[in-house]
Image (cartoon, rainbow, N blue to C red):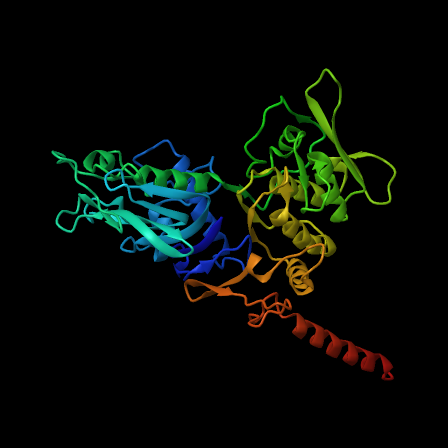
Length: 466
């Protein structure tokens, strides 16, 4: 789970400053304020990790990836190639990482890792994207236990040097060759050959890759409902960027059982999803079934509230087909997943948007096989109804939707000049926001006042004789 993040010189962000990340992290903001850029950045890192090209420092994306950010000039702040892209973030580990020195037998143990890096264009005559430096910090309870990093040599710009803190590196006798990074985060194989006690650097790279591969993304425009779905029995990795694998995921998870808390009954996956749709007040009943025992085609049947007839998914409101991928992905994702979801409220009426807050509280507290799933949600939304329900749940404290202040991080993004700015919303134990930004959700109070004034004038005009 990500716990902290900071970006410098990425798109509209000169500097985000340190951003606290919680199990439920929500970004609000005006259009083109930069709130999407934060998730785009992390998705770009994920794409780079997944790329088979080991020489590629960063992979901004193409038509087959969740984000396509163009060239380095397109994504660097101010489109100024002299700027350096810098970032750091911290995440918790599922199990402590132990670094053991094979020479001294000393060990260093940590339950979290902080990664920092700087990337920029090198050689102004023939510009080439390159890693300036990166470093891993092994931390225990927010205190550094050791660090290891690689950076450009001060004497020769094309060479790199390895440096460690609280760990003494031992040179391999006879080793006299250059070392270099792979991509933006990985120590090259030459590092282990150059030093007698540096094999552990691979563990940091593996933990980084594990973090990136835990990230899943669902975009703001999900696929519309179909009358028939083909499923051959495969198990998709996720519901897809547009929800195209939603029904396949739903069917593949048939044997899984989940519950919403330690005292709640475990239910089969499809039944669990149906109950969540009911709580959103969108359906009465829901089922996915094959059209024939001899066919691999399935249909989604729904009963809407107040109706006694089963209808196909395309025959109900568009909102159901838009929220179904969100629901399935939230519970289909493996434990310790990080889910980026853009505008989950799309095409939902205000009451259902409010219920979304309860749904996401349930997601971060849900269990599978008796164990906490520890899923992290990073949400981008424009919904005032969602925020108000979340504030209410924080104020209620002990309830069916029990959530604490520290489990939530809320931010408002806006622009000042050509820079994006991020305001952490300060929510107290009573659900009150003490630093409510001006025109957060528009100027609703002004609209109410002007409407009342106009109505008064209109009534007076109607009373006056012609």
